Image 1 (cartoon, one colour):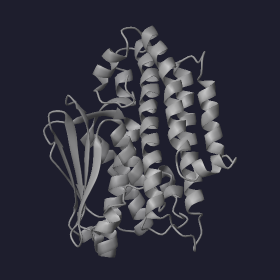
Image 2 (image 1 turned 180 degrees about the horizontal axis):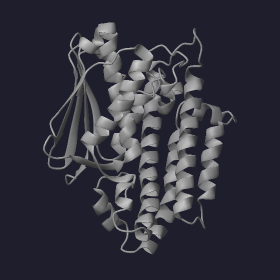
Image 3 (image 1 turned 180 degrees about the vertical axis):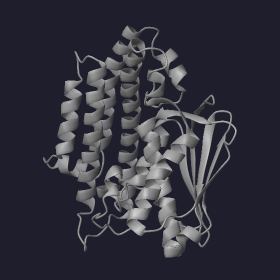
Length: 339
């Protein structure tokens, strides 16, 4: 299989192997290669490369090496080992991001942010590394879930599997509940939201539930923040944020439009650079943000990571903005049949 997930889940299952044994053997061979690719990309990142060249080391790079060594010859792709590796990989990539962030822009009121050259160079390494990580996570989660499918009664796994066709509208509505609660806790006001399209049928996208949720939370949080930034305590009376859902023959499209102040061109050009941000970092004091990894807020991680995730699935994430009128986020993800 390629490093990118470009096919609906049922096609992935057919292509993977004709038997569980063949799929397990294929995964056991692919996981070490996937980890080595992630490590190679990370080691090319600025700061990481400089430190390693001078004889130093980042703890996260050492942990990636340990994971790759653990998954070398003889690694058994069991559901438990896949779940454990998925958890370790998610943790170590968070550590990678934190270490690079600290190396470029140490926290503090007088800390200088990274330059455009630094963030561009980071983007060249960190974005594909996260995309490769996402693709690897999908394979691990798919394998652990597929074994459950063989061992559970018909219909039970279908409702709990993380990697499958998910209703895009249902996912948006679920994410909105949490974003509205966060927004109310942080700002004391909640902008209105209107969901349009997809009224008769539920457009489905094939991806991991956690990955889809992260992308939606990030884009909705940004739309809410932009609306509140412009309208303040009257944000609940501002033009509603519009979420439009619609399929094309191969992909499901999602548009999230706010009526905030818009993004100037010089800022828009860097929105997807890791660690570029226009929001001053403030240590979170509100409690609900813990569900989103509040320590990353204001650090320029959310949008780049959201784009890396959509890229890993063969989709896309772009922004369109007009200063004084607002911003629209455009998301495209592989579509399955309606559910």
